[in-house]
Length: 291
Image (cartoon, rainbow, N blue to C red):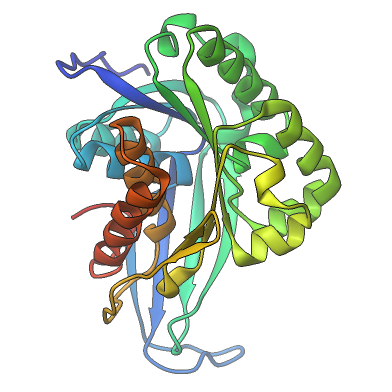
């Protein structure tokens, strides 16, 4: 089933290619017991790094377009409709495989563990893409999740070529230290050296796993430091002190705010200030998307 195409009056500035998933968030009220029950709060919501990035981008007032592949099922249709209601233009390739999901287990200490089934998203192919989805993009956001496996990796590289031909820019988020280890840090460093992204986002764990100076791989390397803020060109941009409710999606809010500010003429340090502010606000609401 293909949903009707909506009309979007705003100029699309930023495109992301990657996953649109169902988030299943589990907040246990006490220690989990092997082979037994434990009371918990369980919520369902939209997830996926590319989709979350687009939702935060739209909330900041910029045009946002998501290129994704989802299951032709009720979950996929609801997730697409939710994003469109948030002002995101979605070009979804409908697939026979089920829509993917992420189980997010929140520990009593506030830390998270995630189990991911990427489902239909990884099956996006370069032949699924239309040139017009990228020609008006000022920036393409590429989660490393979209580079780790085929055929979506070939689709992401094709999207990068189209954006480059239109003189747009590229931002890559390293996404996952575990994903980097499975893909191969040296292999990813080689890929990044060839892609030459203008902006590269990494957490401390991702940067340590990559083991190559971020400065050698992008014009603007941004090291995300969680509640401590971020570091850009050797300068620490501190984050305000808040009492977090849910950190899910904070990195996506950070990246969206940074890219938005940077495209509108802010310096990297000014963009980082906007980014840490947005991420700090995002942790005050439950779920990976703006409320």
